[in-house]
Picture 1: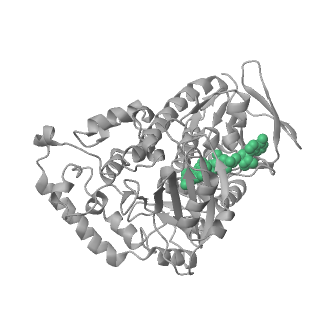
Picture 2: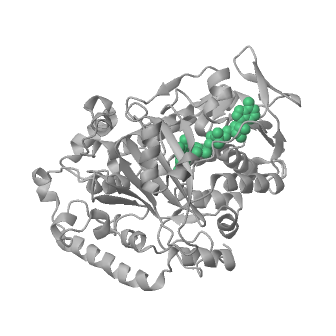
Length: 514
Ligand code: FAD
């Protein structure tokens, strides 16, 4: 048998690096009986982490639980709040419209898809998400997704989190080093050498000198030092699909200590992009992601200042530039990229940390037993990640395609040649029927048919269901589900606390443990 994989170096100490090191260590680190796999994380004291990334998916609950981090500790340490949805304001047209992408599926989704029925039977004027899920109501009313009496990670309404990225890294660093046996080194890799077969051989660190491993995880952020720069894996730009390439990110104080905290990300469309608005416990994270071809920095700062209502705060906004895209492959030779080093599209729908979690879980679950198995595992990883990236690209693009805004940025964002074929095909099919799970035969698809349904109906997609009308004969059952949804709202509005009140209780008392 060829030599076993015994030593893993994770290069980079951002969210991607620590989540990957933590999940690997939890499963394989040398304190587990019979393992003896050593996991080292090297991060530069001089190269800052990106400092943004405040919205997560519900998958983060499983990730935290797997790492053995208590939900109460996480919420207390990371200024974290609950996220139940994304709300898209003025995406369809410039004024007075919004729609939700909630994390909970429509009522009775596994039994009957309400997509073809809701327009006929919902109360006049109600939005799709309002008619089919109680979570729309919870978000509008600022209610939390559970009670303090619920256990850690237990769900009444499905939720992820908003968090302070810097505090999250601190917690992960502390937990992974102290509890999960991740060896932690502060040093800067200045040079990388490769073996004749193209494998990475040695990382030359500024202070410690050479470090070697059997597997290297590149978490160096947009630098992509190992996979991109050293191994030369090409970057596949997606700037024909996504026009936004710059972000201005800032922090905004609440007007008063008891101001309500939104339980969803608010994404408000602007003339050349959109503004994210994320409520943490003691501040909000607000940023404008825009296309530098359609708006200069001064205009972008004015747009952000007008949204926040304070030009002074915007002076401190951090500018981040990026090219939307991803690496051609994500695992080559003995190097796998996770996080921004693998790629980044844009912050919409907060999919980047989900891709980190998916990558890290795969590597931890399918770690090659020896060096000879590395290409087999790498090929499987690349197949999975290509499916995920394709799915994320299609889903994010859908939000733009449905817009009817007339500014040049929005017109160009929905030009036919900018729409990937995979999404174009689906849109043709969905003109005459609703999305269903058979549209996505791959089990690793990033977004579910339910998510597509929320965006399609929220964005007022023009459908003609008449050619298949004979399939939609369950109006009575659909009506019952809508009534059930209303009953659920009546029940939850008296039992769920206001979001801020719930967070105060978590900070004071905490949830009971799992
Ligand atoms: P980084 O945070 O950049 O970390 C890189 C690490 O590599 C650092 O520790 C650095 O010191 C180290 N390093 C680099 N070179 C070397 C070297 N030579 N030697 C040693 N160490 C080195 N994601 C979401 O899921 N939700 C969001 O809401 C969201 N919003 C975003 C908004 C914006 C504007 C942007 C740009 C991104 C957003 N993301 C979001 C993405 C998210 O920020 C990242 O996916 C996440 O922070 C992971 O970053 P990272 O760890 O890959 O890289």
